[in-house]
Length: 292
Image 1: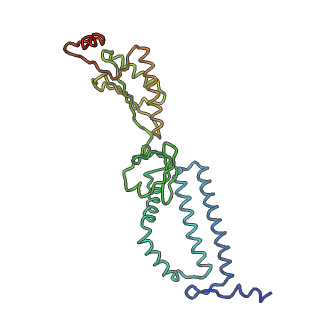
Image 2: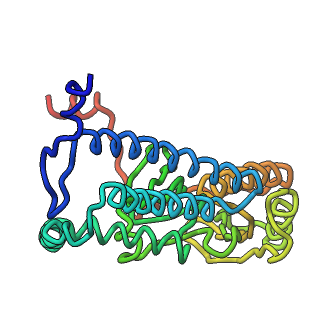
Image 3: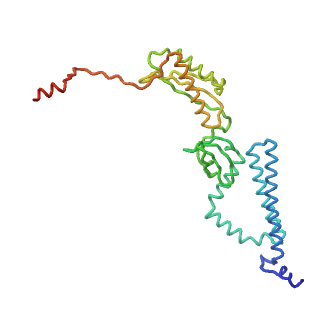
């Protein structure tokens, strides 16, 4: 029996001056697997505990990610210590890694560092509504390499973290959810402008989503080609573009209802054509008779 297990203690290769045996390798693999499972499990426990205490989702994400990375780093050094391998034995590996980073992993490292900056400084938070060029949506998660955004049409987009730091990003909810929107309406010439202003104020006051502070405003915007143009400006709390569109839609419904009751005509494009001179109209039968 002893002869059958001798191979477990025979050196199979060396790292520097340290000889490794199959028994050591099997032991360290088992230890590493158990360690990885423990780190992942403990990270989930930390996440769930913080979430149960209603901690900010960004803080939960940052702490759990830091816990996970720190756990793997500690596990790596414990494995080296278990094998009695000094760090100097990996000097050549660290040199190769440095060269690889310098030539082929610049973007990865850039996005990784940018991800930690985003999670630490929090210029962008989970739940924020962002506008990046043609992309508009809510932030669902901030990872070490990219940020996941759910667009207003439901499609998920992965944006590199470095892009969020190096480009202009409109964050609708950076400080608060206070936003302004407006509804433009044109009424026919000859309408009572005071009455129009009164009805527009009434429409704003009737909507529960419109804030009283800051107060809404009605502006007589312009004498248009076909209409007297008014603009109703309102303030509300919204964390997405969809909320603004819904409020504008509700206001338009209410304005149309109030204008109909007050017999105020909402203008539409029209043209008056004036013709100078005489127009001669000749019947087809008469023209045929003349030609014959």
